[in-house]
Every structure is written in structure tokens, then in C-alpha cells.
Image 1 (cartoon, rainbow, N blue to C red):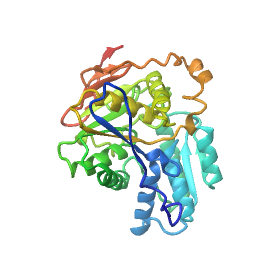
Image 2 (image 1 turned 120 degrees about the horizontal axis):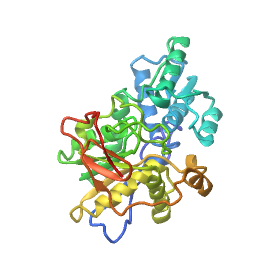
Image 3 (image 1 turned 90 degrees about the vertical axis):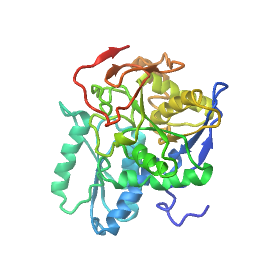
Length: 353
């Protein structure tokens, strides 16, 4: 399919039916957002930057500054620099060498914070530096992936692509970080099926769904040390948390069983969608969004030496998750119904191991 330029190449990603296992009664369709030029957030960067230019918020040649350690950085880099904007990416030491090489090769300036904020982890430190850069660059555009409505708005197109391919969807499964992909896709799909069930996937040690923060968690691409305004709890029905070892195990299984070389966000979504496929009525359609490629993780998830060093090489993934109350502190694959009024923070937690 001919595309007019690299920006036009963003979107229209493949939708693949997974083969799963003999326990599956439902059908799982994986939206391979990882096959955008750099990854899923290419959609967000394209939509946010083009909308900002259309509205006059982003003048020609003005700098773009964003905080990201992964796919959003790459998306802003490819769209911003192609359209002639200097791009500054604020990140932290967790950035992998492949992503950093992509950013610098495209002409971005990469700013790496040295230590995490005492109360808001790496995200807090990155945002502090970002604000300093905005002061130093008057007129710069900040895409604000955590709160810009153009983040979830970018996924209306994704939903339309899915509907065109398979019709209505019964269950959506997606990872949550900035909140854009799950919230935006869910809202768009609910226009076609108001009874859509939405299942969020997060990491243990992420605060998004009321868990205590653990900045040392190994997973990247999902989870957060803050709750982004774009996380729309009202559209979500259920939350699953996986720990690092479980997420890594699921990611390796995804490569082995479905031949999809992806990151841990995709792996965790795969584990949840595969289990849900064994719990639903025959013929129900489950959409799983796979956001990230595996190339960023060759020295972590896909490295036995790294897994041994971090103590996660047992690669244990339970056959099914444990059902818990929403305000339970979890340390392994667990799931809970999300309160109708959204995710509320709870000071007292009950430990489950």
C-alpha cells in the first residue's frame, strides 16, 4: 500500500486472529500497533501535533518538548522532526539504548534526569525538568500525553479500523500508562457496542489503580507513578495486575506461541486476553491491543543473564489470576472489578501474596 510520506504511514495496522489454546471459547484479535513505524504512540504524536498545527498552537519551526521513556518519545520524534520542529525528549535512566539511538539519529535532543523525585518517582523528576525547558524555550509546544484529549482522541481511528475488519467487539483488553489508548479506544468502540466490557492491564507497583508505588518495577510501557488525567476509569470494568516475572513470562510465551516479538505491555495483555478467552461464551470477540515491539527489550526481557540478575528467571505465570477486592495490595497476577465511580485511592490495604 502506497503511503505519501512517513507520517502517512502511521495507522492502518494489521489485526491478527490469535490461535490461543484448546481452552479458548472466545476469539482474540490482536491489533498490532507495534507495527507502526516505531510503535503505538506514533498515532498519538501524529494526531496531537497535526491538531496543534491546525489550531495554531504549534507555529512552524517551534520546538516540541515531551516527557517519555519509550514509544511516545519515538512518535514525537518521527512526526515532529519530519515536519521541521526541533524536538526535546525528557526521559530517565531507564531509557533503553535502542530507543535513545532512534531519538538521537532522528535529530532529537535527549535530556536524562539524574534521580527520581522523592514523592513522585521518575515521572515527577521528568516533569520538573520539562517545565524548566519550557521556560527556556518560550513558544514551545508540549503534547501533554498525560492530559491532552488528543491522546485518547487519536484512537478513534484505531476503533474504526477494527470495526471495518471484524465488526463489533465484545471485550477490549489494553494496557494502561498515560490512559490514552485504552480510554480512547473504549469510548470509540462503545459507540458501536454500548455493552462493551473493558479490561485494563497494569503492573504491580503502579499507582494508577490504587496500588502503592514501587519505582523499582522492571516493566516498561505500562504503569505509572502518577495517575494521568487521561485515565478514564468510568469506561473500565475490570483491572488485572501482573508482576515483573509474570509479565516477562507472558511476553516470552507470546513470541513462542504466536510468533509476535513484543514488549511486556503486549505480553501482559496477551496473558489476560488468553485467559478471558477461556471464560466467555463461544464466539465472543476480544480485542487485544499490542503496543510495543520487542527490540527495546533485547537486553532485559529477552536476556537470560538479565532475568537471572533480577531474580525473575523462574518465569512463573499462573494458569489463572486471583480475584481480589479492588483495594487489596497485590504482588502477583490478580484482578478486581473497578468501582462504578472510578478508581478511588485507599490508605489501608490488605496484602495478598
